[in-house]
Image (cartoon, rainbow, N blue to C red; front, side, top):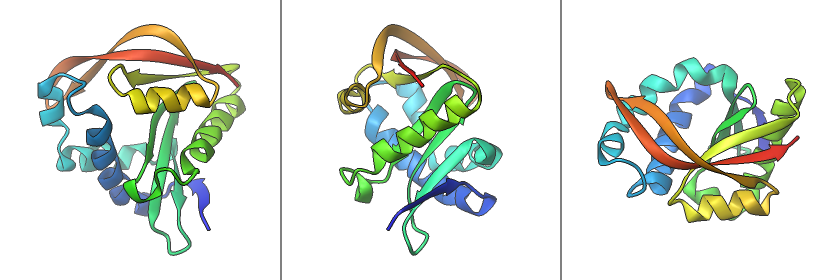
Length: 158
């Protein structure tokens, strides 16, 4: 059985590990090379502790992290499911929880950015009722450098 709950400080090291793995699975070859190089495991471990309040986790009965979402205001900022749980139906549950959090914060719609080349993620969001609203050159800073990733902005009424 899987439970979905707010993250705790104790979850964040596992979140960093899963985020690193999932990020590289979905982004490698689709973002600037320097950004891929800057997204090291230690960099994810540096980023996650401050994100506990934004994070909801899915865990197994034995408390293994299976996936997580991060929500900031009206943005579903991160959605990742570990390799062992992909295809299990967990991703729609996590996305629905993220949508619920956006609505509970008083927003009427949610948005997220998807790397243009990540066809699997784009198809997933469209299957979940999200709409491709166009190009979104997503600016990020990593390793002290600024990068622009070619993304698509997806939106959904919540």
